[in-house]
Image (cartoon, rainbow, N blue to C red; front, side, top):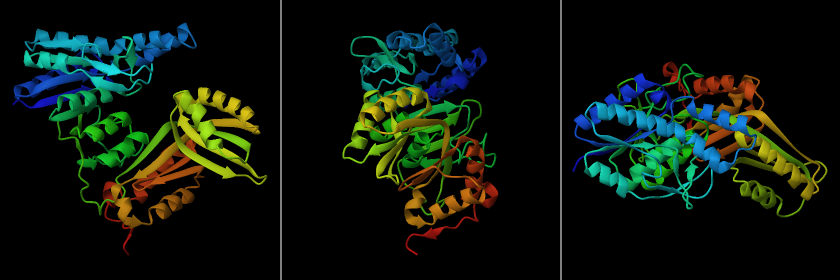
Length: 418
């Protein structure tokens, strides 16, 4: 049987006609090597933002159905142009919307989840020797309307198709040549990783790394989709996302991730009673707003303060909801701060060594960086701090954990068994 590849190209890879011609050459090369290919495309760089701006200029609260109809067109344009190029160069191709590719979603506009893929349309095109070029980021909801998958949803489209078709590999082509120990634009000493575990990649994606969307990584893990991150501009092996936990003893910390897109909200002075957290998180969940870090603590007057973080895009809605919740709970007030950032140290080796927290907090203290919130898991430690400290914190921690190339042999935390 032929090898089946799903090749997804992001916005910078399809930014203009020349770059789309480059995508065509990559697809042609895979076909020349004997593989069948399904291509998934994002919109051209900046196009989705342009469409969102148009929608918000037309209305401060655009109708969700019409909003999704509008912003889904960017991916349709890029997939149609690539199909034209492929056909003109004797590689039969067919552009397909999410609906035409059989991608079925739930009924949430702007943040829809894929519930099923009817693989017959894609199988039919592949069997006929045609390259399906699928518009990412979209599907069809139960009543037949277009629903978009949220920011970065084209990654999820590609991984879901790979899972449904049992592809040999899902290749995510970006403007970088793999996954790095941190964002090289902020941390110049960052190094490319040859491979990374799925657990580490999931933490990186959920904590702000822009290479892969976290929903796509979760999807890949659930269905064991072979995943590789590659550059569409530079030849190379990229970074393999592996399901095996290799070389756990070193490095202890694999990467420093950060996220500028968070906001913090607090309800102050809540009377101490059972069910406070359930009520607050319940009304936020009803608005389809994802909550990240959570802190509940008593104050000196015997009341409760409840703090959590959300994506910055949801800040105004969440704050309005919390202000109503504060009245319902007879709390003093609800406030927010949308100028925070989260910085995280990630690594499967953290499970077998101690002293990571000491290094992290000592480093931040030496730089005079106050910490507002802390959360941990077995393979990550995250802190929330004022956004103005983000770049200094990321660079300092990258060095402290030995991730700069010239320092990798210097970091030697204590094994947990010591």
